Length: 331
Image (cartoon, rainbow, N blue to C red; front, side):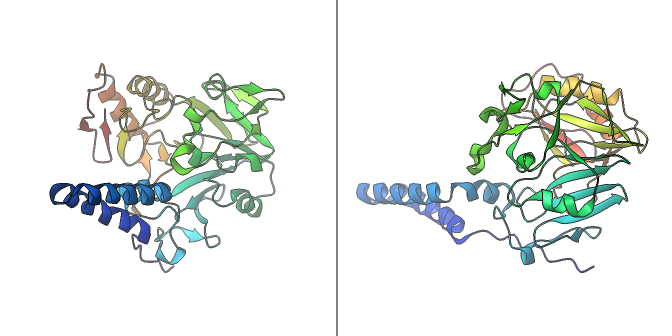
């Protein structure tokens, strides 16, 4: 297939913020008091108006939602419509991508014989349930890797939701097993989003099995990126669906870089996961950093475990340590 050229496009307003920032610096260096005050006020108003575009601009030099023609996708990926993409890992495992969104999220549709699991429920900027309905007639259960806003955007579009024990105990559970994710779990303030109420049906503990019919997934607690994180392990297919537990490149294990991160939790989860998977287990991630092969392996988690088990505490300021050629940790 033809792959679109990936132009890193930012809004005119975002560019203007950068220009005005340097303008203010010059004014404070050489200008008068009134000019300084006016410039600060103007810059402040522009930043407030475009505050949700600033993080994508600084982080990856993209708009929050890019145009389709400006969005590059991988060779083994195809457009489902003008927003979602599909990547078939095999005939029963499909990565549903949102490459126009600045974090390029993947949710995973995992098919059994009797039911399917959607691992993560999309960003919510488009309705992922319409994609799922086109891909399977099986009853679909949603499980989430954690509560961050970009992973549960369409959770309220599904009737059947399973949670893990560590995803329940910090939340306020309302009558009828209803939850509105806490702001500190959701982090939607970063993009002006509020958590949506949903109802869950079942709760699974660490290392318990979800049976899809001729396919079983093991729930593994995976705190670190967030205390409520889990991963799902398909032993028969030798696949691990890792959410945000790690990515190819940086692991942010310092609260200065990720407010919900914990080095202590990463130490627990690395041991917990390594004890269940194999070194050649294929690890599928929620966020690609580029269009190269993003699949990691159990060896990467084993290497992480070997290093992190020797670290007693965070540095005051984040320090980088290369784990192997695929991952490094900021701790």
